[in-house]
Length: 353
Ligand SMILES: NC(=O)c1ccc[n+]([C@@H]2O[C@H](COP(=O)([O-])OP(=O)(O)OC[C@H]3O[C@@H](n4cnc5c(N)ncnc54)[C@H](O)[C@@H]3O)[C@@H](O)[C@H]2O)c1
Image 1: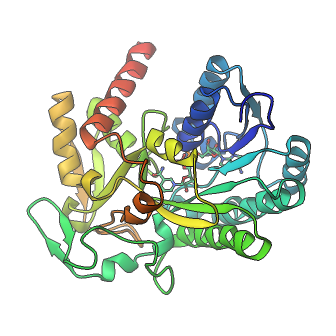
Image 2 (image 1 turned 90 degrees about the vertical axis):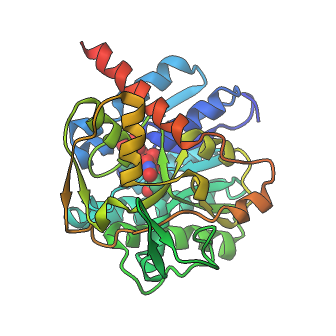
């Protein structure tokens, strides 16, 4: 799929995952069109702005074209997809925060659920053969993973044993648990993406992300946990941990490993895409790791109140992905990911002084 073919369309192209996917394809000399209206700044304030990343992509890649378009605008979405007839669509635009959603339920649902429907229907009308890859989330499982038997270790919570020793599989229930409004709007999108695959025979695919991370995140307190944590450490600012004795566990995957998977998705499928057990870390362990890299103490305060619907332990069971795509693997371990984010924040700090 070189420059003479129809382009690839990436929504949320200025965000963490979107920008990595743009870079991945544009570096392979493939024409990429991106859609982003910097809504992240509206959701999270100036620190959430992704404009810097859009400008970086435009500067670096001649194969990249930016469209300042809101995916909630149905006519604009239909018009763009009709004119581009993209060879593939990678949909990463979203209201991505669990906690922010409760304050902005209409914006959250209109972006996550209705925006996804706008794109799916446009794809069905104008490019039904094009693979449609949707970034979904582990929050579609709601807080049901918290009902599993857990054990408390010195620095982390862990799953109590089989059959969860490798993490949460795609067959896990998405029903009858607390999701947060964000989780619910993402369930709507996830099921709609699957339905356009099953009902219309379109090549759609859902990737249910664990913690996706990397230096291109405009990390803020409500989203982009590692980026924000490392920024707090570097700036000696207090980080607030909410509940679970700071032993809650997440699996982290670098955005590049997500982008490299998107290059060859199997169609009409659902995958859990995270760092897996090997890249899982608790808050307490994350504090120690960043301290060992930066040499600065992590300042934090503890709130007894856990976030609504928050997972106590979550890591992705990667076995389905690894069986379907034996060539794919997580290439960046936690130490590498932390170091990269640390270095990039330091560079950004230096460029401001
Ligand atoms: N980052 C994570 O830890 C994580 C984890 C699981 C799933 N996901 C999912 O992956 C996807 C990408 O996440 P991310 O971390 O890159 O988010 P991000 O906020 O960094 O990027 C999303 C981009 O979409 C844009 N956007 C939002 N609403 C828009 C709209 N209405 N029209 C056009 N553009 C709009 C934003 O401006 C932003 O640049 C999301 O669907 C998210 O739910 C992320």
